[in-house]
Length: 129
Image 1 (tube, rainbow, N blue to C red):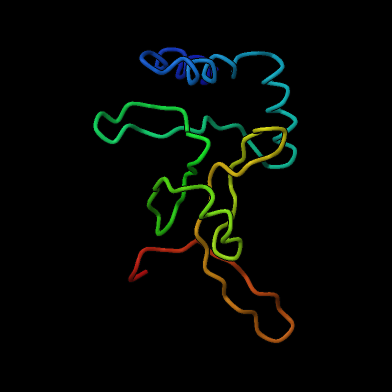
Image 2: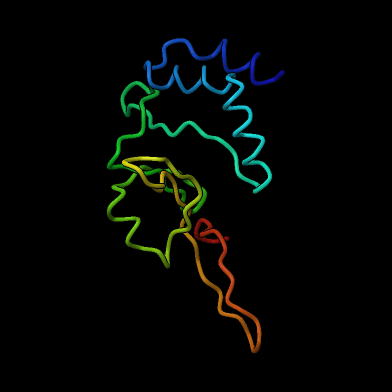
């Protein structure tokens, strides 16, 4: 299985919280959750951030979320991004403090529909594209 051969040998040096996440993907109950999520086109991720000086993996802080905009990823204060519901589409969630909480979002641009068609949203692309 690809999961076994990739994740187990690459988890060295991770903080314990992220090693726990890497180990958990092998548990039967997590595999069952993953199978059930796949029925809804959802998956499992390991929310994380990187140390700006070393590049080391760190758990994603409660106050930060991953943001993709113009095909670039940054980490921004959650409370600022979640208020911009027309601008950001949630794409990853945590279970925190008894509720689903957004962990990552993509910045979108809205294109108005014509006539009877609904507006569509697309990913914000780099300038010039």
